[in-house]
Amino acid sequence: MSYGDPTVSPAAAERDGAASSGERLSLGVAARLSRYLQVLTQAKKMGKETISSQELSDYTHVNSTQIRRDLSGFGKFGKRGVGYNVEALVSQIRKILRTAGQHNIALLGAGHLGKAIASSDIFADHGFRVVAIFDVDPDKVGASIGSQIVRHTGELRQVVEDEDIVVGVLAVPTSAAQGLANELVDAGVKIIFNYSESLLVVPPEVTVHTSSPAVDLLYALYFYLT
Amino acid sequence: MSYGDPTVSPAAAERDGAASSGERLSLGVAARLSRYLQVLTQAKKMGKETISSQELSDYTHVNSTQIRRDLSGFGKFGKRGVGYNVEALVSQIRKILRTAGQHNIALLGAGHLGKAIASSDIFADHGFRVVAIFDVDPDKVGASIGSQIVRHTGELRQVVEDEDIVVGVLAVPTSAAQGLANELVDAGVKIIFNYSESLLVVPPEVTVHTSSPAVDLLYALYFYLT
DNA sequence: TAGATTGTTAATCGATTAACAATC
DNA sequence: TAGATTGTTAATCGATTAACAATC
Image (cartoon, rainbow over all chains, first blue to last red; front, side):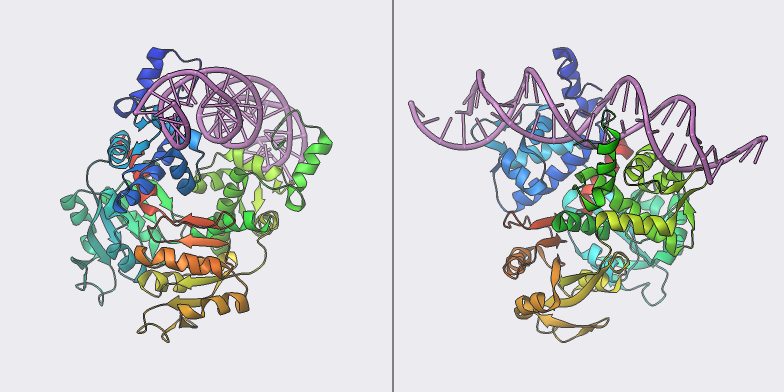
């Protein structure tokens, strides 16, 4: 890969720069761009109009040179002496990540965590919409959370198809997670977001992301203790 | 740093290997070890006695060679042809990360998310104990969540001192996050775990980790769409 | 023994950083 | 203009990987 390779020809560099319509981003670049986007989204909410690579660095803990480097690979988005226009940069990064559109999510589990997720706008801010909430507990089925009515997991397959759901979020007890993951896979969902502690086994074409606050905490603690 | 440097002398390699009692781990190694620990902890719960680097790789998405390399830097923990003993490896990694002990957490926010965190054992499994829950809402103060009584945030400073709290978890609305972060900092907390969307401003000696499920989702979606 | 899996080497690749001219 | 900040270079450093002998 020639991204960031100083020996690359200008023509090849331009090809790389146009990665938004061509080559796949490297894992690292995609991860960092996502983080910039989160900060920018929040900065925009707060009414900030421009932001410098140094400010982005303060919030993301990514080196400011690295940030300028990541962005300049796709175009000259900044103004020297001023910084980056927040709103313009948000749409540029969305374009690069091809996540400008809306994506539908199914939320599994209507307990405390499920309710917290459904009522938060942490997903909504990034174009993810919770379009269905499921639970197995008959006491919870039929209740309303926000604008949604909790459905029984038996309806999963049909709803995934009807609502064009691409992501399943597991906010269920560890013991129930694998079974529901299987149902999501059967229904054709390709991305599973796992908030349980279960080690999920899925086919290779399905991506599982397991949320691990305790892991992040261990990591932070190590650098605090040393 | 000589970690992984093939030109290093055997003596220096041994010094590195003993990093658990000497040098600081690199950011990457510490992050990966934390992830291995999470998987191992869960594998142990499921009664698994040994685990191979390949299995660890399947669950963590870290290359199996990388895993063997990370571990062999600290000792010969595995058995050729067999794998690693799960329980032994858990305690080795805990020793390396120096997180063998118990650490006390203050949880701020007794809403859905706060309740979900308090009743989960995702922190408890890694030696983190929620020893106090706070809220500003008078309707919530005095209620009990698990074995804890919700306290008013006015008591924060005193409780942090009395209970030797090192980590503060913010499970509050974005608008309240910065104010409570300030109070945590004033009380002497050095690690803040932020579940709100607020871009927190804190002194340099304080570490903020902002949870960002939507960012992770954007990232997963990019690789799904391309 | 035969099969499996570790520990380790050697080579490559990408990430990181300091520094600074360009320029808003 | 003066100050600030980008875009880019060049150098370094650490991460990643394939391959395989050692050995359980």
